[in-house]
Image (cartoon, rainbow, N blue to C red; front, side, top):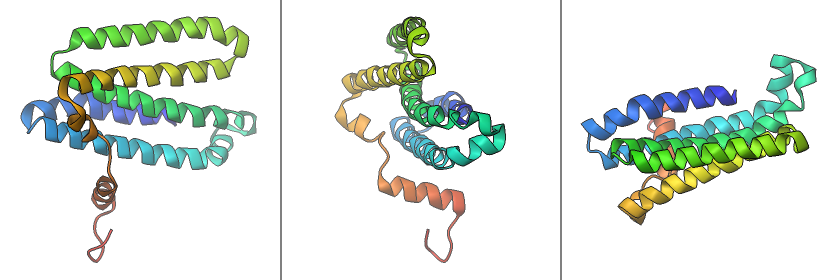
Length: 180
């Protein structure tokens, strides 16, 4: 389930974003698609968080009940990963590949090192924690880079607002009698 979320957002990030940045009004569309992608990830993550206790045993069997705990934490990791991916798309489109490579390689290296050290000691929880931690670092460093390049206003406009949620719901479900 978590992997499905990653495939969906990966498709949006790697296929749609570069087109939008180059073909449309660049910044405004990038910010809009960033907000929509984040809303979709938050919505899907909330749904998976709610149903994971029921869905995991139903789909995979009772022996996988404990996996729903890990899935819930990996949903947080997925949110950080999506934020980092959105930022990396902006960095690619604006020719900041050297910075992107530094961020990606350093967080990847940290992920591998921490996993090699912590998994033998703490097991699967270590892998879950390390994923959350390194995705958080990647997102933080990438967004900070955008902040340093474009400023506060640009980054703030990437954050979803309640109005964006309403627009996404209207798009998904259509309008009924002029209301959401």
